[in-house]
Image (tube, rainbow, N blue to C red; front, side):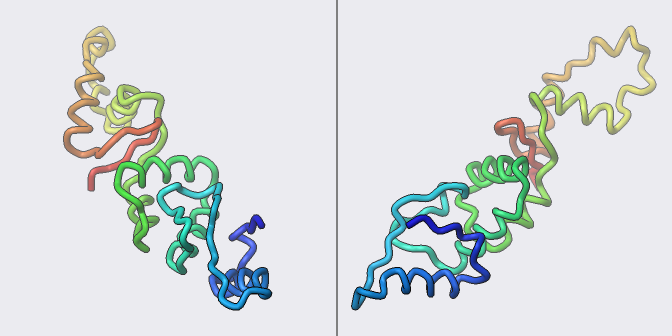
Length: 151
């Protein structure tokens, strides 16, 4: 039976429904044979613990764009099973950009790096190399259009 985890107020409520569904068994072995709408790293056919349940509920509270960015984040940083993963994600998430070069242009504009440079000379600024330097120092990675800070 498919269960929407977001419909449960708590892990205990979820477990109660699972036990009810298997009330005709003396010692039911609960298995989770399929999943959707949460990161693959959290899926475990053998069971669902309370910490993972809570993470899934927090994940469900993200909007679609944040979910896509969050998946990119945990795919690069590990399974994301610790309680601080959402705080870390929010601290390090910068935004969505079409390319590393577009992000470098954004940083240059935000910082006003080229404000006093004549237009005829601005065209020679190498955003590709600037992007490479940004991702070698202050920014951790660019994945699927999402940019994250290194620290």
